[in-house]
Image (cartoon, rainbow, N blue to C red; front, side, top):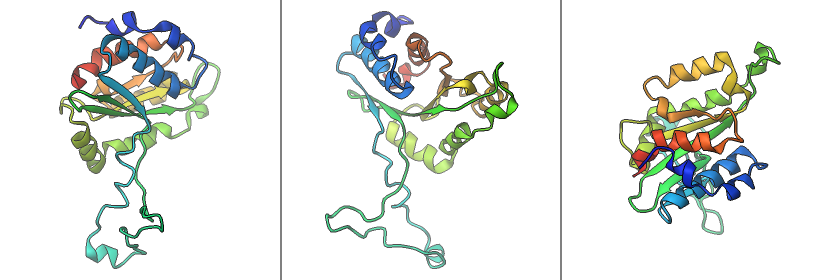
Length: 210
């Protein structure tokens, strides 16, 4: 597929109408309309996928650990038959290939940052640091198994918005974390420019979903 095909064939009237919306909604609408224009009916950009909603609550602990904590019966049900205890993670989006079953899960993180009009303390938030949980062995394993993507990339995509995308400290930190996996994070510096985001996705991640 020619580079920038998603940008060239996207429904810009639909996308332009969504520009006043939050970045998370604009991301979904932009990517879905662009994919539909090139691969009609093949992809679903799903917000808040539910695959991992109970991965923590159902994880069995060793008996010697369970005996020493305030443990609960993780199989207990409510009156309506639903689990009484349920906790896990909720990612922001999943890009699903409905034909081959491959899935790219991801997060959109917004954070303030140190730019020309602020000082270094403006970048003291930790939203970007919370995304580091996806590097842990357990989450990496379950995301890779569920998504079915090549091991050439990480099994998740981090999309970052806000002034953090121009912060000299945070840009260096995040680049350091993602060494050799630069395809797996994207600094969406101008969220009014959906075309740049579509180009990044097409050139770096779409091939792994096909």
